[in-house]
Amino acid sequence: MTGRKILIVDDESAIRDMLRVALEMAEYQVMEASNAQDAHSIIIDEKPDLILLDWMMPGTSGIELARRLKRDEVTANTPIIMLTAKGEEDNKIQGLEVGADDYITKPFSPRELVARLKAVLRRADPQINSAPITVQGLCLDPASHRVTINDQSVDMGPTEYRLLEFFLTHQERAYTRSQLLDHVWGGNVYVEERTVDVHIRRLRKALTIDGHEDLIQTVRGTGYRFSTRIEA
Image (spheres, rainbow, N blue to C red):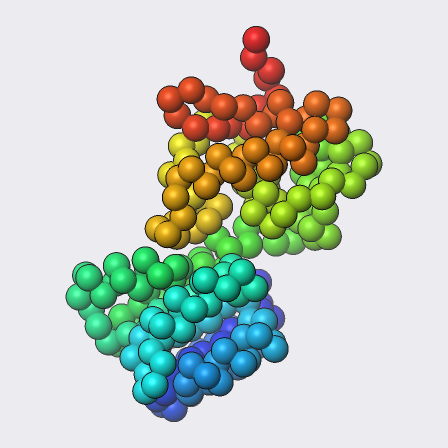
């Protein structure tokens, strides 16, 4: 996981210096911005793997930048960890509600930060460096980000890909819509549970080659599961 690009966004140079040293010691590539405007430009141009974002900054606040990033489909999947001196519960909730993946209250130890950062990166990209997953001719290759059925290429959107990836790594277990939102969308509260149904339909449509749509099963009263056991 080392070598990933991390953007630090904080108006305090001392905080940026401390974070940069800790992250470089952990072998991450580090970029810095002191305000939201510069940060947004770097995010678009450099596409960091994760953003450490200060809550309170002059001009556009960190929470406003996080909201903007999560509303833009180009940057919506970039993980964000909020950094702030605010410890009140409602502020933590507000940060998570706009789509932040984690929340760390200052002061914190660099060691804790790096551990939390690694955990968020693992959640954001759980299949990094893993081998292809194959079930009954259906193959998902995390390295190339390709899906095939009996060597035929399958086209699907990024959300359907993440859904399929989750199902393939969690087979034979039923998940509620809420659980799928947490695992696949990252717990974004602005996404309604019925959105899951829409993407399940799209995923099934993409898997119609040789009847593989039947692997995505509806569990009445619960939600969905991926199973090779076709029920009558």
